[in-house]
Length: 489
Image (cartoon, rainbow, N blue to C red; front, top):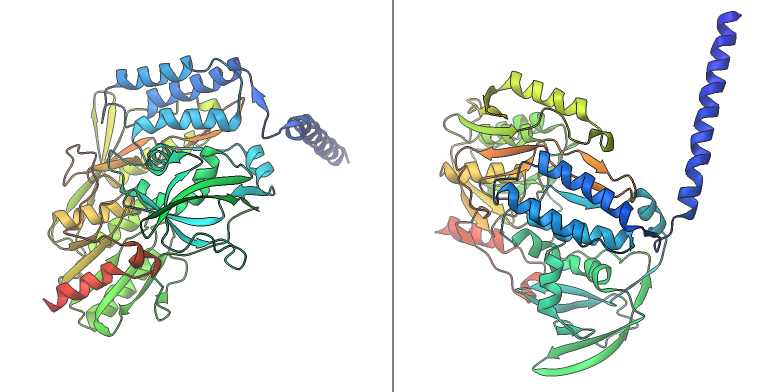
């Protein structure tokens, strides 16, 4: 009875505390609005906390620019905070400064309250799907073609609300994270993502003044905005082959080139799932039994994922052991009261030290993993790797190592990830105390040991493929077409 009474009191106490915390949190959520402004002192506190953490922790410091450069960037950011700002205004100001890091794994996200509030709201959008190609902007289709056919397919947009398209595209690029100095990943996002980013950056009026050119005729039209919770889905990617087999619990599918069963295709959308080891084992056994002479690995739009999944894939192709190195110069997260996962970071360092080689140089720890060639079902024939600006992070490890080893022919466009490596491994989120904005900051630098020299460029294809507007809107697959040409040769 005594123990039972203590237990019930403890439960009651916990319940009371939870209810109290819930009640205390209610006013903040209830009073939050999209137009709520934060005082300069609050914004300065948030900016100081996150920039201090970045300067102490971010592995890009010293890669493209010295620490003093970033100190000046963030000092200018803090000096620019002289007035009250909404969360969105402050978030955009942070993004402009953080773009100087040239890191595709560093992201700035809305607060939970902002995302929750904006999700059910109807917003004004430009009433046309816009496609950005070769630094120009075109009309792809009307969002509501039954009611609006004013601007025809393929019409070039020159200005929106008196802002030239090149200015719109150049400004928008600063708000898309990317590795190094290459812009293929940013351009790929803007190709169709401008439909979302344009109104977010330039405003959502009830109508838009659009200057266009169609068949050398320039005209200006006023088009009414379309009011929606979200834009209807519209795919412009190459049509998927219904005969491809999708492997359960993985982002892998396999099949063959159309009309050519001698050319196998392995599409890997990401390395994030868990069943890759088993899928690889079954797949490479299968193509060995089929005596496949030509294999296509499709890494387009593959944003990365688990490093071990990329290492395992490489083991079926490499002829000799190769190494990948992760490094960090911190032993724990700075300003860790504003983030979580410090134990996970330390545990990751411990695991890396066990499964690889650990070395220390000054205050920096290096963890080197060796990728050993797999003898069973090793693939020794022709490999074609398809890349574009969406090939990023772990998928760039595969592309970089295959290209350096001369085991593959790369087809497509420059990767979004840098050929020398990226900043990733473990990426904690910092929650800023006042605005509650979330900032993702990587803790490790991943070094491609086969080519570690700093270039800031992506991995270049052996055969570059460029899409015209007609190719793109027709959803053609020019990379597959190029593979067929090379095989015939």
